[in-house]
Image (cartoon, rainbow, N blue to C red; front, side):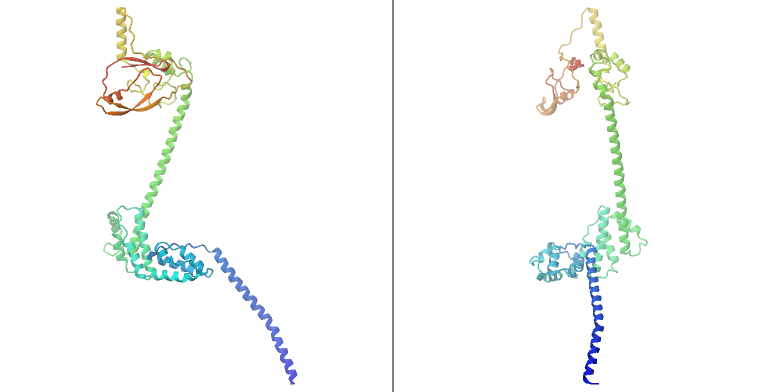
Amino acid sequence: VPQSSFCAIKCTIMGSQLVMSKPIMEAKYDEARKLLKSKMWSTAHHQQSAPKIEIPEFSGHYNKWISFKDLFLETIHKNPTLNKAQKMQHLKTKLKGEAERLVQHLSISADNYSSCWAILTQRYDNRRLQFSSFMNTMLQLPVIHKPDAYNLKKLHDVTTECLNGLTNIGFDITSWDPMIVHLMAQKLDCGTFNEYIKSLQDNREVPTLQEFLTFLENQFTAFETMKSSKKESQSAEKAAGTEKHASRNYEHKKWQLKTYHTSYGQCPLCKNNHVLMRCPQFIDSDTKQRNSIVAKLRLCKNCLFRHENETCNSVKTCKECNMNHHTLLHYNKSHNKIANSTSTENQRSGQRPSKETGTASSNHLSANNMEVLLTTVQVKVMTVDGTYINLRALVDQGSQVNLITENAAQLLRLPRNKLTAKISGVGSVSGDFH
């Protein structure tokens, strides 16, 4: 074959190869681009959909280092999307207390991240101190004096947490059950310890740790159930009490509504604008006539008002005998006998009954509002032996006499003389005092 023909054939073959390899290269390029795009989308989608993990703060406790270290390594240290400066920022914001003071001389920068992490691992990657920390946490639990859900749950949770921590740092605790159960059972009070012994299936066999933890769980669950039932019972009693109080208030308001017109309307006896106890016609009548008037008008003998309740809501009683009737309806037998005998003697002797001295009266004041507000003061009064006591006084500027209660007179140890007097007040209301 001539040299020229050989070169022509070679060029033709090479051209054919180039033409054939071009589609193959384009196909491989498209495949690589699709794979890269898929990986980028998968990474972005994972970052958006994955829940944000909150790293707990680390304050330098050896028994907390393992959990902090593992979580920080997986979420921050091995995260390819974060640079070293960002990792340093995350690390320093999670350090508190002793751990924070250990690396406080290192500023937040990319160059200091590796040094900061190395200092922390050098200090806290100490299995001996970690072991001591877990054991001390268990052994230093206080003895339970008063069993309740909180103390029993704390004993259960701390024991479980410390044993899991010892397992995480490489200790085999499968044969520790008798020792751990013996130590932790000493933390129970006498009553709970006796119940634990009774719960054992075989008293002569060494109990397992799982049996002890199950007993604790049953105990604090029972306490929580009792507490929940007690709260529900108290809530029900409180609701019933509130409903009863509301019903009592409603009845009181209902009574007030029914007696309002009677109190501030017309007098049922003379039809004037006053209540029955202020009625001159009713007051001038004798006790027998007053009782007859009250019975005829079907009024309450205690408050002199008309109401539908069988029991009167008024707390006031008779001032003479403290019985449940109005003072104006009180029968004073001794006084009536004296008055009758005096009247008979006066009639026999032809004399007219003498008027009582020391009578104070006031003009009748008619007002639509029957309620009057008077000032009260606390006064310091000296007794007969020179000591002082505090008394409350009612200040009535329109009064012409000064009155004192029997109780106050006894407290002041004042000498007293018997005297019969008649005192008249506003609205011609009068009363006999002995």
